[in-house]
Length: 147
Image 1 (tube, rainbow, N blue to C red):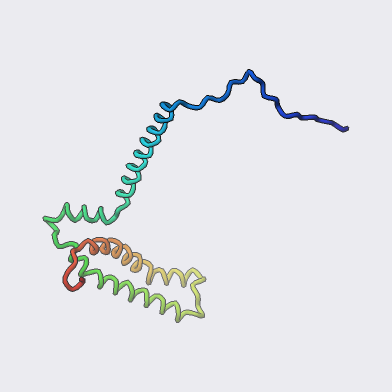
Image 2 (cartoon, rainbow, N blue to C red):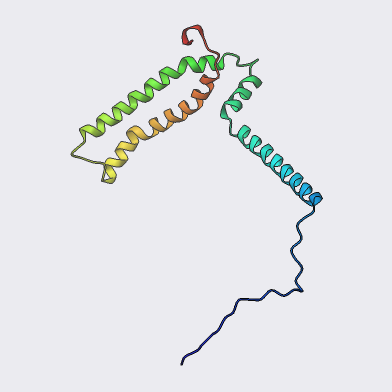
């Protein structure tokens, strides 16, 4: 079975009206709407940016409790090096223990559980404490020795 199709280009008829361009009033109104929408988007982006500003949240917290805990940021700044030192010491201990167990990797459940019992909880708690103390310490006013 053979079929033959012949397709020709459509011929425009004179009965079709040409596409009318929008009047300048319509264009002006459309541009106003676009500017209004972009202004709304800008306002939303500013709100999103402010919501993600963690430094602003910490500043707000410290300002609310300034009367009761006025020196909290300075105390956090003073304690931060000690916490960082404890974290680094624990990481050094952990990596040294793994390096020494080169021939006994953590591929069996007993070794993995022992490793997690020894380092897991302490390490995760130190990370949590550092993630809370660090931003508060950053809000402390600069002292003469840190300038």
